[in-house]
View 1: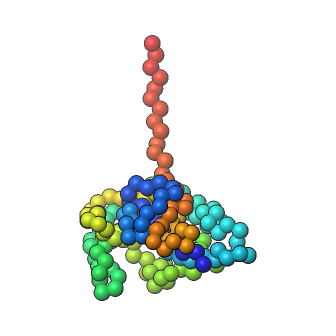
View 2: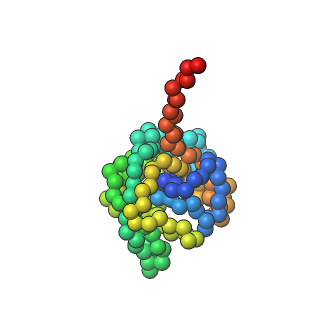
View 3: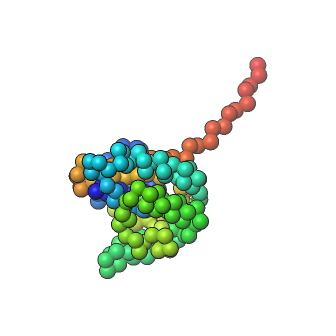
Length: 175
């Protein structure tokens, strides 16, 4: 099985970026899951998933999200997080990705945190955190390998969808 995750990065990242498992850029988790990558499974599950995710991701890029209040997640409330206010586009993206993973026969890691139980948040990390009321633009969605090459100590961005900035053409100056 291959352990993957789809996230919205809040910090600048690049496709192919490798980072330590304990030093994630700030992000909103969309869905964590496992897919079969054994011989005889789908030829390239990453490419297939990327194709299934492309339209829902494109439809969500550009949504403006708002950071809500703080909470503690995890075992015994040990992980400080900033909640992200509910947003229909973010919820819809989460649900469409869930459907795409199901179509591939994938297994969602934490079913109780999906669909109606989805609670988008940004975990605080190494002194980095958003603040209540901050605006977050949904402009970087990524598919991340949680153990590239079987190395569980690192993560790798396999696919990155970005909101392209608008190109403004200046009127031609006549001489």
